[in-house]
Length: 274
Image (cartoon, rainbow, N blue to C red; front, side):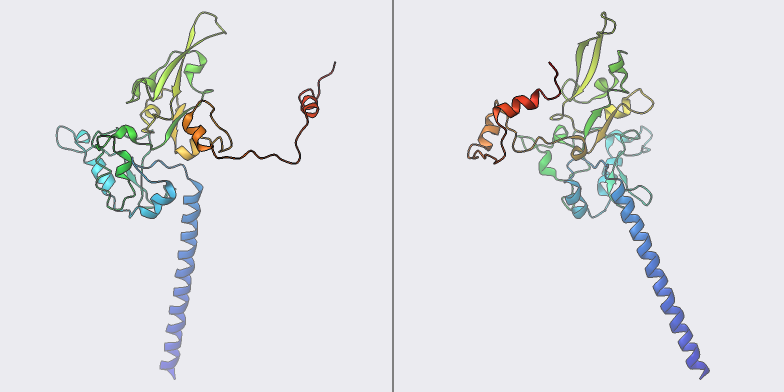
């Protein structure tokens, strides 16, 4: 009888431990999932697939980060290594654990010509064909890791203080970032030298963010889906032949509730007193 009671107690204890561990695991996973969802602004290596597809394809092997750390330009004369651009996410990073990312203010992407992080990817999460030029050669300038955005209110160049740190740091100087001269109406004597980012050229390397002289960078890189807008398919560029071609078979649609010319005039003059 005593032996039976001992077995029963062991069974109950094991069952309770299992339930407790399962509950704890559920809480940890729930917390981790919330952590990841709360911080979508993550910059991936060159050639990374769109975020959702990237997370499905990445096998978290770390080969890209290892190749980045071992690149020739990252090895000192005494043979020691400097920290690589790419980091592998761990708990507390607010990113999917085991996936590669980089933080420009710490170590930006240095735009290696041979892009060592991409060819070693075994799963296609880093899409090498997307980085090939017309000669079928790897071209880092085709990377779109993100897009640099200028916050005008905190950029001292927009105050009238001469600064071109981001322009000089840009590896595609004069193309990804250009300097626009604009008259300073406040003084009437000086000109603003304003940094302008061109989204069709910017690779999102973050070298400009790293170089920014303000306490908190006034130029920063965001994932493209978070830094660009979208006009919508119903807007057409009349001067763009490709855009015209896109809608050549479109049919005009009239809504039932259309404003008359008089109504439109009334609407424009709304609130105007004569």
